[in-house]
Image (cartoon, rainbow, N blue to C red; front, side, top):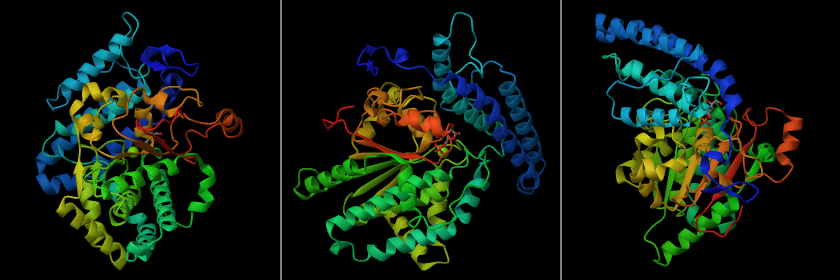
Length: 453
Ligand code: F6P
Ligand code: MG
């Protein structure tokens, strides 16, 4: 049971209302645009499919487009959400979730696109895109978002070089760096990873959103826009873990990144992970990504390995050296990539312990969890219409496998943990402050600390 902002304990379903009216607008405005782009991309690649698979490729292209056009029509005309029948391994989970949604509806009202929580239908759309391709071999494995993701990587190349050069500047002398300077580097790389989340392609419906200027130089000016900054708590969690490792109280420190977007954001995450290892703050890093193309720019295994290979192959020494190092980390197993199906399901994270106990148990063995991006924040907080002063812990509703931190630029109508009055002031000055991607949070919660909401 969760407590509301007055302290009253209320059942989770009543503790806050789903983001209803916003859902309606977003489904109608943004999702069809994304679907249209998906259809265009498949059509544009018709010749490629023909060259690779002959007539079979052309047939598959036509069939996939027909399924996606049907999906767009269902979405635009508020048709019922359909059960999945494509035989993929997660079908039962999705269908059970639909039943759960049905259970929350009044009497006979059917679960449809406009009358369901935004989080659910948005996730469902990406699962149906997966279905449309999966049902059409030989293009079943085609990543319809790949072009945008690779383009975003290449268009951010100068920013990546600037970041790798900055990193190389102090990485060589890491052993002699005084603690206060180490902390300063950590804060900077943390903020670079935070602002890397501006570069997702879902908010721009696939239009270029890459980083063009030096990410380090822009940090000072951006600081003002960080609404919650729990960097100190994060730093002390890492320093405590390091002390315990050094004194033999724990064998090592593991940090898990729950990744968000490919392109420049992923590069910033890899640089931060690199720093955690080379500074001795962590000894192992696990990356959690998506098992199929998701929310336009999210990282899949293919994107992850491709990014490391491209970084290695770069024409710039600082950049290629990072790539070589990252490949080495992968080879040694101190870095690893994981893609549990739960990350591509619609569940809020407070459901994880019951619905994906194996994943929850894995996260419990980490010393720190870094959740990247907006969608992860929505799932952490249940995508509810919380009062802005409600504490992060309350909004997490019991999800606390390990100390965790959200690094998120705001793109959806949820924000908790603000000082009284801050949200109202922002709303009166900038009505779109929660959705424009200009603001960000570094928001931390530890089940081990006494920090109260
Ligand atoms: O705002 C549109 C949107 O698709 C949201 O639904 C989603 O939360 C966000 O973009 C994706 O952002 P991120 O890549 O940071 O999770
Ligand atoms: Mg994303």
